[in-house]
Amino acid sequence: MSPSSQAAGPALRSRGMSDLAIRNLFIIPTIVFLIVFNIFPLIYSLGYSFTDFRASTNEPARFVGLQNYRDLLSDPFIWRNFTITAKYVLVSVTGQVIVGFGIALLLNREIPFKGLLTTLLLLPMMLSMAVVGLFWKLLYDPSFGIINYALGLGTFEWLANPDVALYAIALVDIWMWSPFVMLLSLAGLSAVPKHLYEAAAIDRASGLYTFFRITLPLVAPILLIAIIFRTMEAFKTFDLAYILASQPTTEVISIRLYKMAFQEWQTGLSCAFAYIVLIMVLAITNIYVKYLNKVKER
Amino acid sequence: MAAVRTTGEVLRHRLAVVSLVVILFVMLAPILWITATAFKPRNLATTVPPTVFFTPEVSPFVKLMVKRSQLREKPTEEQLAAAPWWERLVLEGGEKVVRSGKGAVQPSGYPSRFLNSLIVATVSTVLAVSMGTITAYGFSRFKVKGEDDWLFFILSTRMLPPVVVAIPMFLMYRAVGLNDTHLGLIILYTAFNLSFSVWLMKGFIDEIPKEYEDAALVDGYTRMQAFFKIVLPEAATGIAATAVFCFITAWNEYAFALIMTNKRAQTAPPFIPSQIGSGLPDWTVIAAGTVLFLLPVAIFTFLLRNHLLRGMSFGAIRK
Image 1 (tube, rainbow over the protein chains, first blue to last red):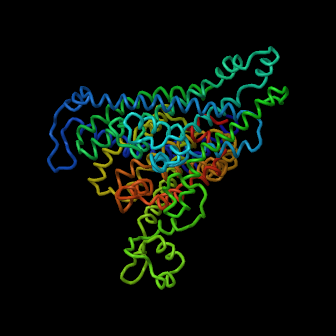
Image 2 (image 1 turned 90 degrees about the horizontal axis):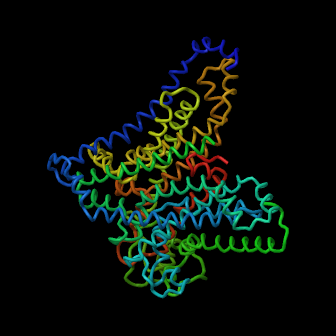
Image 3 (image 1 turned 180 degrees about the horizontal axis):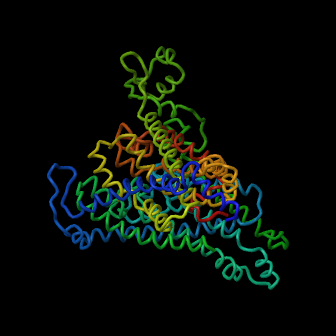
């Protein structure tokens, strides 16, 4: 701070609101709002998670202690939902990284209409997942769908086939979110210093060597952000899977939770389930935010 | 990239451009297909093999807007002659427009859902961005004890799966009568977008040099005046970008809307897929509703193109 502004300090405080008052006025309402609408409901549901409450009846909730948690953690069906979700996350995030990073590598050169091309490629990720799911149903239709026609697959069942449905949903997710990985990869690629490539060219390094020794290590941190972010989102997935298919093999965690809470009305049990999911998400988020801050500081 | 030199490089460059064109076509094909379907006559929407070339018509959009019922027999010449052009399109499709006792055209379920989406997304965006901007300023310019922990807290509220939050919110809203109301959905979307808005705006405000305000303070401005007259205009682009992101998020949101609304305050995302439910769906009408719903987002994507990276990474990557 310069000496003049320091001298002005006390005088300023006598005019208008003090900095402290402004800070509190600006920050506290938001914190209170988020506590009331995000934290309070969670405390509310923590209470219900120890009861056998059913929101569809008027019977009062009965305290059952840790029974809900015990039931859930020993329920093999719940673990199947976790396995399905893990498979979905693995397939869709891997697909997005390969496709997204691949397109970014192709785009990372001087070509006409690059800006327009990039923006058009980014369009899918901006759309509503529910509506995207809906129109992929039309594309996937076994008899009149354009996909079977274009690939010459006859009347291949995508969404009604329990073995294929989850991959079909992951494919839509890959279509939608590869652009996200592409966007972040492009930022990483454009930040690689050009002189490294020039030096590699002088040394007659092979394309493969340049890629693995220069490109990949320098893009890795930003690519990792993309991977963590997509992993978290894929873990939470609901819209696409819910709209596209209703197979037991596509029942990801969010869908199981939704059915438990709003179709079977096992409110107490679903609150406990929500808490198990919440703890898992917070753990992943913690890692993510720590990593974000690390990258930001560089 | 360095200037293209050898024949090998020229070839590789051309190959990349060709692949990009192919990729662009494949990526956009689903969107092009649903758009094409929205302009098809109903009998061409679900043909085997799929119809690629056809004379476009607007009847799906007319049908999307009005309540219709099946005609038992073909419309007569007089009926067709007496009807205005848009009603003729419906009649030719073997349906009639439902009118009330006084003869007023009854709207379908779509316009009210679209309007609900517009109201909920707009109001929640205004709230989230204005609260987010001042909170971001607070965090950016003043010392806050445990700042990183607060910012983590703010972000973590956004990371939860919507269904996890929706269960207790549903119970609470039921207790206070906020289920299926605009206000209920607005509050949810504001809370959801607020964390995003704080994070993104903090990045934008951090970039505005502190010296601008210091100079204004020396000139006799109060801190509030400096905020409104110096900081806000400087942050205008950031505010606009944040607002568009919040709007798109609220506009696209599905899970909360599905759980918290069913008719009065229902938004378009849960409504559009629900049309498939019974019988043979008229895909041209569903496609028309889809296209109309996706159009604002497509336009916004172009307006936002320079801020997409920043917005999608929660302000972590700024380029």
